[in-house]
Length: 154
Length: 151
Image (cartoon, rainbow over all chains, first blue to last red):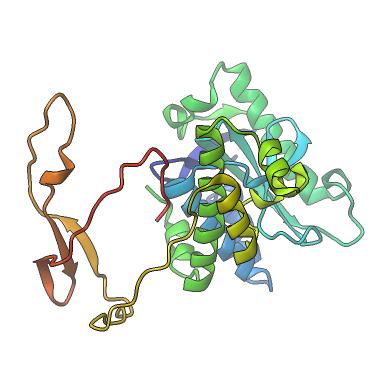
């Protein structure tokens, strides 16, 4: 049986960021992606995103600092204003205070939408499944801090 | 609370990147708050500036590199100040790198009336890890204007 858990990633006074651990993985989805990006030429963009997460959590709140992927509550981070920039990191945005960080990847030049690339599509699909499961369990976005480390069936 | 990995990565963020994000996101958030407080829409701001609404939305995505010209135009359109330039004093010393200087509230307890904290009773000290804490000679004021700031 496959399952997932939600863990706390970073909490400030304006917003909280969580991530998802699936099955018996040691690391959460966002940390796995961060680890992969860290050893590439995209390390500086990863650090830029980390800084943005801290500023959103501590100072500004989440606002409109995302791009809508047209996939219900799944958004992607606006890391760089350059539209052609290849990093895609997805999240679910519940109101302005609770964000679940997911995975993503490096968009290939031939990819137009996330559905066309396996790693991007599976990151979005997992987040949508997490959202659906929380919905079916009657857990609202603001209640996420109460269900940390609980196991949910995928 | 922060995950171990987040703390480790955050410690590696270069100062210029952190400052750029603080400025771009802080400016966007501040403009957003002014609009909300004054019950103005982005469309209203776009109209005042002769821009399209989509351009205003792009400014608000937290990664826009505002030019001084744009900041000046927004300040004029909203009749507000977005950026303050500090005045240089002759006796002013540059900030030491990693000096851990901070302002601390030094009085342990402040009586509140009806749950309201009397800000004029705060005793503020300048603290530095190597030099200890000492009361500030300057006057620090806390601006309680209706519009929030992101200093």
